[in-house]
Image (tube, rainbow, N blue to C red; front, side, top):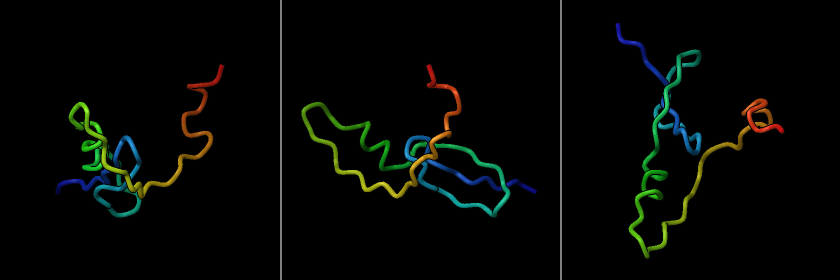
Length: 66
């Protein structure tokens, strides 16, 4: 039986594909985030209506502490 993963955007944390609670998570880039990165030169990006939740203060642990 295939395992079901939750899929989350690695850039904005939007849930791309939900899975039952307790399942593993994998990451992708959502269509809105990829669209913002693929804007042709000289053109303004479309406004991004993020549905993501803010990251908790300790999300990155000690990675950025000096």
